[in-house]
Image 1 (cartoon, rainbow, N blue to C red):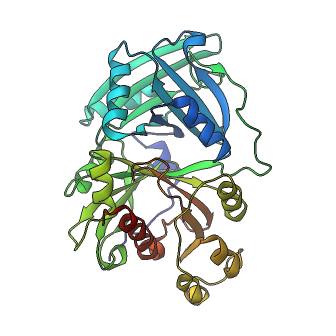
Image 2: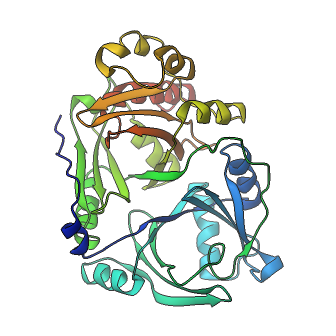
Length: 382
């Protein structure tokens, strides 16, 4: 097991960053039924519908719903009547992969400069920079390709004050918001790639976006008796955008990464981690709304205090809600993972509450993987 040292970026590094970013702009999903997806994430995840694009306001081919929770923004798009390459891509993506993430959009201060730098460093262009305008101002967009069919749209929106993008109109919430906000930001987005491709994509982010390697996980701590994987984390200089990348490792049985690659039909976004200030309240709220979380055996909690120390949440509450704990030299974190949120065992979510630690739950990897393996066994996929 090796792990790189993490450093806090300084002001000079930010000023010299060849690919500066402001943060995650949106996670964009291609889905079979955007209206129903928007309802699910509103009612089950406590998100708020803020914008819409569809036939009623000029979009004849697709319907898109924009949901927010703090700075976290999800966009769900489905095809109404396919008539262009974009609509064909959405339809084929859903047919081949099921509901999934097609775009990890990144907000940048200068989309043209970011695009030009990325392409000069070898990125494959999807969309050259272009402007979209309405009465709320102008947004500059460009897009580059990453693993699988995933893309990064580069969004420059400093000159825009509309609800999302030109072509979208403000929309009323679908359901009443929960009393307590369930989460407030995207912490990190995890990609699964094929065996032998992880280092290639780590190199891509190093070169194309100037991201640095934040963490590395290999060896026994990221394996169980039956399955294993390897993982590296890349991040921008301010740690606002963090992308862990996983690949399967040779083991006795099929790993969770192998299962994802089989059922997704190739590489893609595996899970999205969401920051919450109160994981206990969030888990109670989301579980009551029907969200299913992975189970953790009681034995995990029997010795938890011995190695994790005290946290703000009593061990008995952690045991009741099946919340995991990890501690490192900087502090601790609380985390829990949902089961897949669609019928295919592909995309799922993580809730994370950080108290100093900027890690990813290294101490929980074995418990997490064993919980996933129990679900794989139920599906007959282990």
